[in-house]
Image (cartoon, rainbow over all chains, first blue to last red; front, side, top):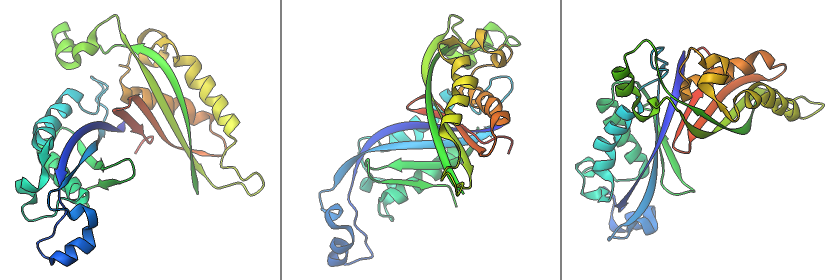
Length: 135
Length: 136
């Protein structure tokens, strides 16, 4: 029997939204306050959803200890209390939460082969959330 | 088609143990959850049903009826219980969040009349939940 399992994590990071392919004026017009040269930060909530057959021996889709370990090592330890703009992943991409969702999805797709990755969802604030399903 | 979700809460204890595995294997796989004395959670269940809105009542489902079914089939059986010892499904199945979601689905499905069961979501805590959609 197939089930979906979702685990929630938290991390904090700063970013500045600024596109190298736009003029200063266009950046200000597009990103508004988020274009502030000194950046700003968020407390992100990350939801990782995986799916798979429930193993009859363990009753689990996957062992949470393994999922937690991979997410901690490859996502939280990488991005928590960091400036996203300084990260290699965002050298050529604006660190919007849309792009952060895609980056995290791609990382987990590579690093967590123990269940099927369904989606990565990020709450940037209580008002804004983003979800990427790899499509 | 409209989807309607009803939420309920129950408190229960459980532990994870597979009698076909050695004590060492059980401890390795299940860690602290293997403590035979059990530990507990405040589970939150979200049951989502779907259906067309009845033109006379304006309802997808009679909420009172859904609430009664949830109370009778799930809460009375699981609330303030030691799942491994008191809920029949878990006498020979480990009461993981996955299996709890499946058991709740299987209890509710035959009781549904007009609305169709769409999803059962079980939160073990705010940071972990499982969704079950029936046989996919």
